[in-house]
Length: 637
Image 1 (cartoon, rainbow, N blue to C red):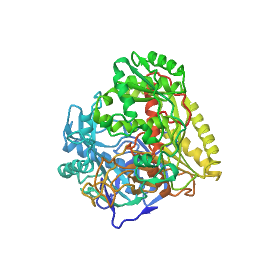
Image 2 (spheres, rainbow, N blue to C red; image 1 turned 90 degrees about the horizontal axis):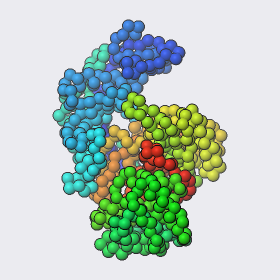
Image 3 (cartoon, one colour; image 1 turned 90 degrees about the vertical axis):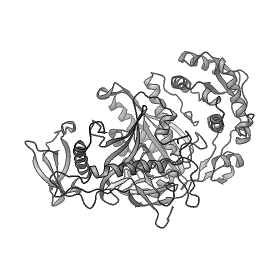
Image 4 (spheres, rainbow, N blue to C red; image 1 turned 45 degrees about the vertical axis):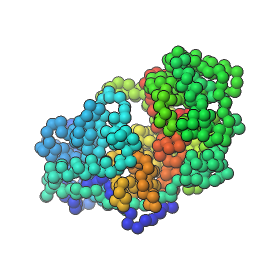
């Protein structure tokens, strides 16, 4: 159910073309069967109208944007082929940039896939502040234009730091969370528009009767608001806050007993390990944390026989596992205290998960910093509770009986630049229900050859959907933007076949949190959209804000991220599940993240996929063993 607010608009970072894009000239020839395009040589393949007067009668053509022997000039309206019009706008802007800017003031990717321009605002040792311009078609209003966004472009080899977060606007000048993120991002963009817009526009197009004018202000779009997230605790008691709910009502599904915590550390870190133990017991008063037992209504036991290691090499971690597995007590949860070191973390995680053991890590940096530990200890306790088998909360779903399947991949890629190739294929699914309860993680494709991998993906996904269709009335697949075109084709074909059996209702949504979209809410001083707002970009295409301010409380108390781009895939001739229900489920699932009480607000179906994919990728880069964990406990938190 959406909440209709009168005159609620969000202003999208799209500078639309004034009026209509006039007909323009391209050069084409009929495309023979199996004749391929060559984008790097400026030859593209499109289906186009045979005659511009009738857009419905179409043929296959090879297209160039400049005259060439064997190609015939053809005037086309902008609506003839949306992607071709975007390409023409891109090439026209590229030509204009070369006329009005010096080399080094802007850049264009060498590949033909990323059609965007980067204009440098400021240079830093860590990288450059840039404005990115990208041609776009807004299907909801049938307008062409250019998305304009701010981005920090990190220099190669520069390690991540708080300074980079500051330059990216995530942190303010005092290195605190930037509560003015939306206002600062808007200011960067509008400042660039004021100084550069008149240099670039209007834009001449080849063969057009007049140059194309472009607006200099964001585009207003009508916005709707979905229902806010509600968290369900023990006894089905409902809360707006996860922490308060767990503390007052108790977790949704407690465990009979928490496995003992077995600390793993270097001898020089023994004192820090003891501090963490005290913090988890609520014995560090300056942290204002009540303790694991008071929060989760569950006592904890800390093993008196810790594992002391020399370092976090693979050999030492394998020795530590032998000690963990040989402990004369119930299966324990290893709590690893280690320095902030990526190699150490990845090595230990790969070795332990390959043995089927979920670990909990706390860095020495965090334990040496009162402020950091104060913000971290509750989340460490939460992750331990989940790894012990507990379920802290769920979100109130739109309807019961829905399964959410997140699908992603983490292929092992070798080589560099144009010589990169996939050495090993790996895909997996993460299952939750629509209340956000984690169900399982399943490998659905793993092979050295692409053909074998795609066959496994097809068979395993079909089997999964067939099995789940017997248990759930609706099944929604959330696919990561990382999936390749061939993988998406397999997923679409499998879901279409499953939908044709009509045993269950299906939907597939492509979820992309890395995008060039941004919008402001002019109703509030912070420009932050209301939580659970969405706008329609085109046919079954949306932007959705999982976090934001509230109409009755517009004050900003945290840094809010930008929108998530959502696109429904066509899997049936009938709309089997309403878009609004799927959007509401996504909002709800963004509150089901058990990684922390204030963890990133993203649908767990996709966020958990990204966590697993990132870990698998780093395991494979180092030739470390892959996880053997397939159980209900989320080891990847």
